[in-house]
Length: 330
Image 1: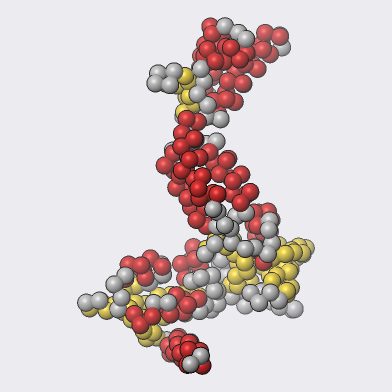
Image 2 (image 1 turned 90 degrees about the vertical axis):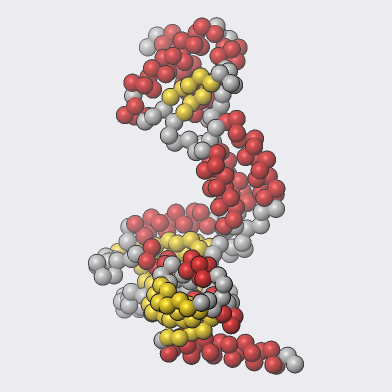
């Protein structure tokens, strides 16, 4: 390869690199930077434009386009985030409070590289205050992103593992499980797994473990298979689990007399309105575990449990204990 060819490749790659960063490319600016003529830069830009057009099967709908308003070239391709898309993603990330500040800032910085260069100062200005006052939720295990990725590989490889885990009361326990999914909800990532007893058996009832409370993972040689009946459906569980309290499935029925029926239906994806008279709705829903109880109790007198009997009695018992705690303080 001749020196001239190497030089040309260097200039073209330099131009492409700057363009992929979202920068506006000025012919005069590039010429001054590389100490060549504007004619040389224009020739290299044209060669790059022709190469992009000839290799659409590799680069997709990618073009280097001159923008007369800003007097420079910009790279346009399908993978660029629209500014409104970027803002929505950043707002969601900040709202989750699930990442350490440094991880969040690094992730947002990478996302900004996928949007137009001239809009990045505006994005910085819009999120500056939120990032300054960002407070993540407290985690026991700090490297949540690394742990999520490790568990994802174990799920894919169907590896049985023993985790060292801190329960809500800070008791440290060891659990041998068959990991089957990762979910995110209510500020935390959760590992879904089937508990394995000392004989190596499981009842295939999904149990949820907060990923940030997993402080160690021992990987076993033993792998497992899931049948059609026991294969895990993350979407189905997400719709039926409230506040990430897993357990056995059940169908509940309750009466709602509030003015925010749609909020109830949005919060419980499996909810179905059986009847509606005025502001009184009878709702049925398929759920896992008893996490739904905490949400419905928060609705106060606007909710009345109807079925099954065990659900009704559980709600009654909780209300009685709440009332008792107030009476004891008198």
